[in-house]
Image 1 (tube, one colour):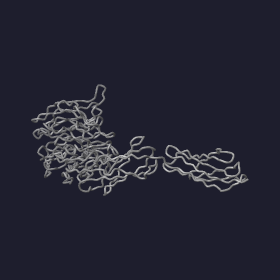
Image 2: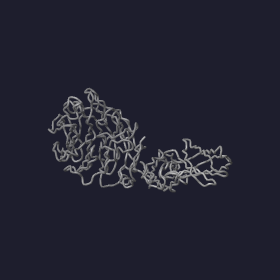
Image 3: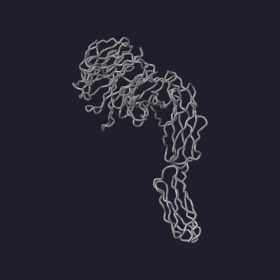
Length: 577
């Protein structure tokens, strides 16, 4: 189903201990996210627009924008915190985009094509809050300072959405009101602590240097505070915004920038924070970001392929060097990437809700990640052994060991990862299953003569801490070769001698057919005959007219190469006149 990627040795004990006090415990980075405490739901939507969480009633709302045609109906799928679908709200002939939950959890606000509606979060009863200008693109919705804010793109078709002029609007006394703030593109809104609201501009052809700004929404007012554009004097470094989030205390802003990765900024002036987060794994493009409600953690979503992590969960404090918990989403059971604006936490930080999509963006999944509060130790015991005792280049080698783990038996077999380090560097050998008795076997075929160091790692999972790596160094020798000769006991000088033979080389196949040296020793001395080339099946033939009577010895030899030993064989023939 899913795999996990580990680019370096990891130690997650500190993070595990810190998380335990909050009900959120992670095992180690990376760990495959599919576990008993992780629910994965296939969403009944074909396009995604928004995710919202009601912490009071433990509800998760996912919106399907469906903006392709102006009379399309939208969908809001409703789940509880365990991943059970409670209902599906259909907005008849009005696509739905932005979602926001009121501070008391009583209402879900939804931006529809021509209005903003509110739904009771327990009965799902619908109320029209205000009508708005017709929207063809999808609108953002945010609740801040007791008011509802939303965006209104001025477009007459979907083709105009990327560069449409977009207004920031509000609902005041039940009516649609223009705030006067506007710019080009699908402006993003994010509300946070201290009556603050972020507004960010995606990169588009009418906004080569997009902005990020912070509003103060206290007492129903809308006052712009800090603002920033990121391009330098040469136009480089412009913001490529995919998501934005305010920290739990409102002092920091995190931005998912598809070019720069995760930016961490100071809220008061949007300057770069003194310390930032480590770069996302190579090949991962930032798509989403979210701070946990308790202020301790940040989730950083990405779009990546193969074994490159799509999600990192780590301490919100960038100076905390504890390794992140890494998730890889890959395939029809998980999706392939975290979607932009696709993550929210529960208020207590015990659950992370993440929406993933397939590569085509036509199917979606909701992941409810709830690591358990208890972790158990694991350890390697007895060191590593290998067979055969003499390792040979190009031949199978088995490295064996044992992993012990505390706590209950795992629901799925544990996995270890192995590497081989030789003169050509470090090579990833893959993942190997641990049997019920704790034993495992790493299979390899070393391809270089000399010392090879095997390192076996257990990275941990959602219930087990990582174990200290175990290593062993194996001396890899050359593969043996052999020559077998078949010669007559007697021959005559008149009829000549024919000797047949077979050349055998173990290990890695030779790059070319072996060429054998042939020497003849008789009463007149030793001389070199014409070399013979071994056929594809390993056979060869030597024909000679001897020059002297009595015993004549033929010696056939091969000098060996970097991966194979030399070999020789002799045959003596009694020669008559």
